[in-house]
Amino acid sequence: MAMDMLTKAQKNIESLRNDDMFQNIYESTKKDGKVYNFDLQLSTSSNRRRRVPRQYDEKLRDQALEDSVVSYKVNTYFVILDIISADLKKKI
Image (tube, rainbow, N blue to C red; front, side, top):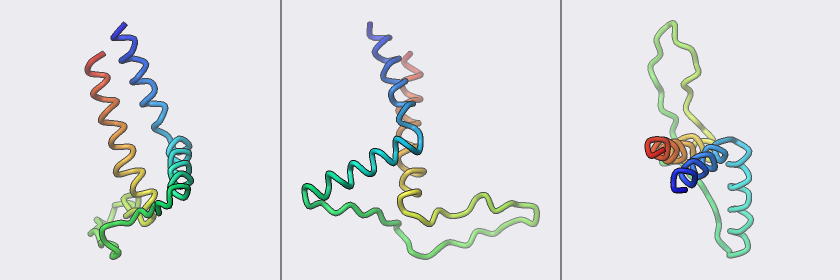
């Protein structure tokens, strides 16, 4: 019974890890924030983009995330879900 609950919880966490679910959660949070007069603003710690030295054969795929919502999604939301999912997999 406990193993079934852990498996179900792990599957639920994995189902949250996609762009559509993040967008749904973000939009509902913004909507609820307006109801309770709470202004949701995500901001990065620095306004200046950092220059990263590149090698001559390196591609531009490691660009800095400019949009604060995308930065939050990638650096916080997905990371937290990955940690929870990995811990649940260890227990199963």
